[in-house]
Image 1 (cartoon, rainbow, N blue to C red):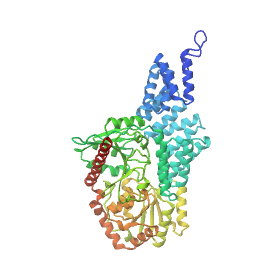
Image 2 (image 1 turned 45 degrees about the vertical axis):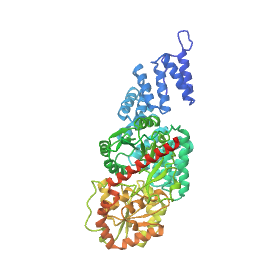
Image 3 (image 1 turned 90 degrees about the horizontal axis):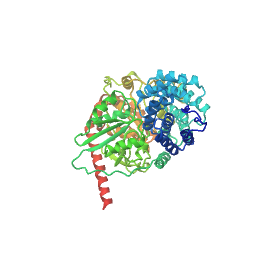
Image 4 (image 1 turned 120 degrees about the vertical axis):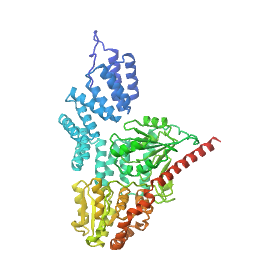
Length: 639
């Protein structure tokens, strides 16, 4: 940030002014990365001259660098009050406001910076970022183009334009932009991480893992990049479960060293009060997590439990509005630094804080190291260990995590619910079932509408075997958005003698159209080793049985849990050979398919999967037992 001196470089006698010398020293410390020393100098300057605009502006920049956006906002606003046309201060104010999730304010501040200086590259770039956060892709595009016109060799501008293309579902353009950023600046860790995300989305798992590792080699203290790597490892069929566990444990050890944990708060006595439960998620919106969370939220016994929903996302939708209306306390926390979020949780006297993200996008796992709640859990969003030893329990069930099988793959203790770890809420938009199963057309149709990134080479080979064993059968898949990946998929099946017309690839659909696709199918084939959950429930609700392959790790057992809860254990394969056998035999049993097509929805209605009151009582009983156990342990320690 270039800031013009207010005083010039000499006083009336030509000697440097003491405050100018102090400012120069503070800036030198700041540039050298000695932020504490720089902050002390800025504080000393402002004690002598509280309205020193340059010191305030540089202090705002330091606060942004140090992850203290609220301080940055205060300093930038004071700088603007001292100098109303201070364009750099407006730019920093907008950056800090965006970090705090105040998008409208950020856009206003950054637009003002651009009005004051149309050629201000940083303001253009950051305005584009804020507009993209606000989903105004057209306006964001204009700002990125303007920034690139000012500095066409900016790696950051190309990286951010790649983010825009990813939002617009233009994967080829996104990857080209990220690669251009890397070519301009090989040390641009964020561009490498973003390329990894794009490759993961498209199903190129090995390349994505490589991109994430290269990013972390350049910038190892980025928790979101670690999380993206860990999530992607679970889609790989090349790694042992022990190797994946070791990577998660390494994450926990690394960030545990960087976060100074507070002392664990004690559980307050339970008698005569409601238990205070906090759910923390970035997915209180149109998202698979909300599909399973809303039934629990609606069924909670609010006479015994006080519910807090902490929402770590700047955008919302009608699902967000429903959750906001249902929760007793709905608290937006996007942009809050970990220390402030932990303080919020602690001030709310939360008894049990539940992470619903795991290592998925926009998680707040590093905050859990600060120990703001007496009991900390993870559930739903990530079927595996977080690696965070400060999280006490992962909530699961006996089918997803059979006792003695997956316990050693967790740093958390496993708390198994008695029936199921899932509670599915069928969509209002779900169409009614037709009267006849699709196979009446003359050939069976298999379907998998899971994310294409979950279709590992292992499961693709099994699908090819199934198609080869069932002549004329069809396979309906969700297509990758990258033409190259589509071509590779078609070549894979062609090399195994599967005619092109037997593989139908469909683009992502709106909800009602997506659900209607199941009306064209006889049998759903689950992915492996990252099995489906929402898609499995959706298929069953639409009358389509699902065949799943049980793995030796939690990510490979979501289908096992759901099918057991639905009373469909016959469709769980223990080996790849059995997976093929079950699918082939079911395709030939037209009578059973017709019966399943007609009965699965009612079977789902009668199962624990859609029994929200029962699920809520099981969860609440678990919460009470956890607290009682913690109280007993605390009492034993005091004796």
